Image 1: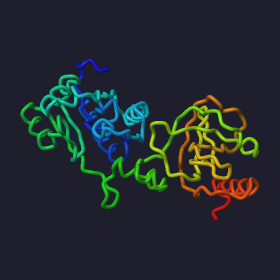
Image 2 (image 1 turned 90 degrees about the vertical axis):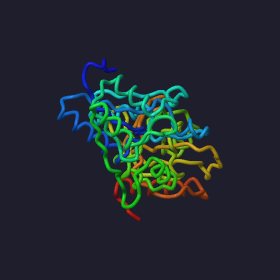
Image 3 (image 1 turned 180 degrees about the vertical axis):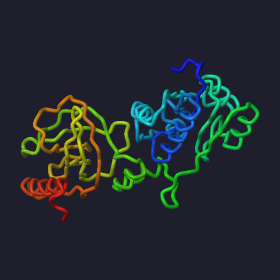
Image 4 (image 1 turned 90 degrees about the horizontal axis):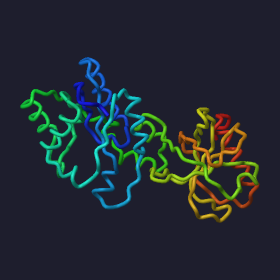
Length: 296
């Protein structure tokens, strides 16, 4: 954590998915920090704000650790995850800005034009500018980033993921949607069909639409093309939903290892096949499509 000795530029936001709009704010803040010779601090929240206010379980696009990694990759010198508690969220708009200003010796705030803060979201860009003027500080406001007429947002991305529009979701994210998880034991069906798979679960992360995807799996820093199935397995009358990734050109035991799966494109819906042989033939077609050898 910074020690308040170096003046800093603060990128204000929740930045829950670090999508292309969020990236614009952080990148703009970084450019200012470089010009001023100051540190860039990215402000976010420790927990799930949507879950806190709705009282209902909410999935995430990025975990806290993944957000932290993204912030640093965008040039942050430090990042701060504020607690999602009644005490912190109860700070009024002035108290909130005073807290951030003092904690990080901030002299410049950067945010999106729709940014709100403080108890009941009572603070907005107009108040931020007013506060800055009174205290000799600087404010930079970044225009909303839109996809056509639509605002780029985390809820929009979640909707795209849920409907199988993976390529559109990836465009809004500015990167392929991914999941990092530990491979768990499975029933060995894939191995018995001579099509071994790595089995994972989404956990707290947003699930994609059930279906078959073309993507990649990263193992020990090496990327492999993969056919990824998410959902139940009707051919075997298995209702449990899970991810099965058939990793191409990889030979080894992945059980218990942490891997990262990237979802690149939606291939097809899950269907119930009349036989295992029919299923195997379809998976072979899926493999060819992922390799770019079959576009049917």
